[in-house]
Image (cartoon, rainbow, N blue to C red; front, side, top):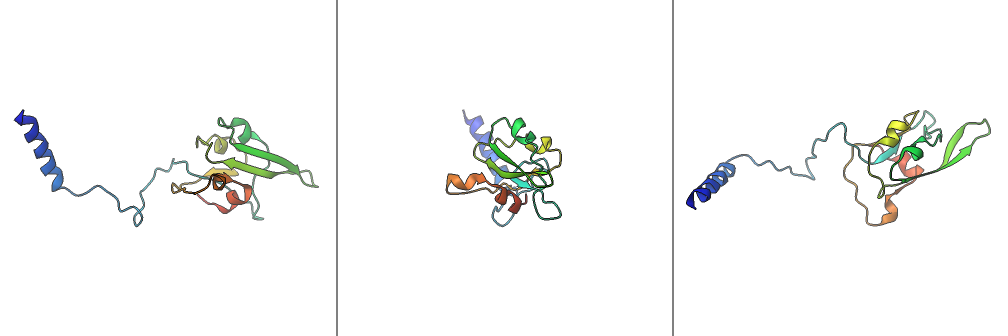
Amino acid sequence: MIIPLLKGLRLTLKMFFSRPVTIEYPEKKRQISPRWRGMHYFEKNPQGETACVACGLCVAVCPSRCITLEIREREDGSRYPGRYEIDALRCIFCGYCQEACPVNAIKLGQDYEVVHYERKDFLLTKDKLLAGKG
């Protein structure tokens, strides 16, 4: 009965004199894996618009059906997303949309600090996707 107590005290004393492993979070950020999938953002073309060609592959491959795409067409026949929305609360951050995109327009960033007070703020519109950079 006393042996487990002594083992516990030995472990406590050993850890008491070692360096702490905590990170001072707001001042120092944690290194994350390069494979981390954070919030979505759009890559821009040289004109500053989205590189998306509105093919709809991201919508088709999304397992949680959180992407809404409204396809529009220009006078020259090229397609573009008229309305593109991602419901971040429904998204499971699988990365399939990024992998399926033929022009690498949609990306998942490296950020992990995503806080909003209202549900409507988690709806990522085309403008929010263009403004955000992982």
